Length: 275
Image (cartoon, rainbow, N blue to C red; front, side, top):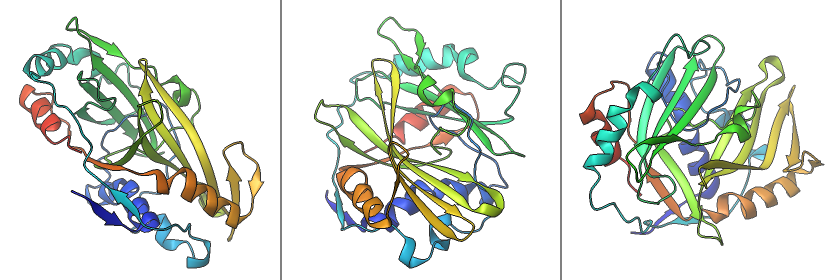
């Protein structure tokens, strides 16, 4: 099935819907795949930050097309559910280890489309809105291996906001890798909000994370940057955002999260993972 969506508004709304959910759930944060800690925007905001940006400053772009991804579901996944469950001590929240975070959710998916499931653990701390995410993948030998997320885990401001994100947009690059469009939002308090638009994928047991462009609110004015941190004009930013971000979208994926470590929850989560 093919679905046409307005490129900017629908994408922003979907990628930022996690923040509105956090409000409705009384700040009960949920999970996704990052693995760092990044200062998040004020969860008390009742609307998406993008809706507060003047129309003249919003990103622009033509419509993009979302089609069904040709995902090949593994013939037998029951044993993978069991592996994930049997190794829950590795990925579930442990207050003795996860000392900087106090809320976690989990999700099961196959982000790299290789037939082996991943369990994603994502958490936050409810007073400073830092988030963290770790990913573990089932191996052919029946164990769990941790995906290397150091590319954004080592920088407190680098992680994308994947928390409770249940709609993901993606595309396949020239090398056949499935990539996901993500946003990192940082609340700079009185100065305003910064948005970093990036692309993320799993390759060779490692998260590959590539910033595309950034828009920063600075006391009422907006400053724009390219992937290398060079200041650019709004017109240049819009062109980069369209050609290297919004317009390359091919697929839309749904996700289901859980917070109870039960075997049936793992199965339910994967059943909710659909392109």
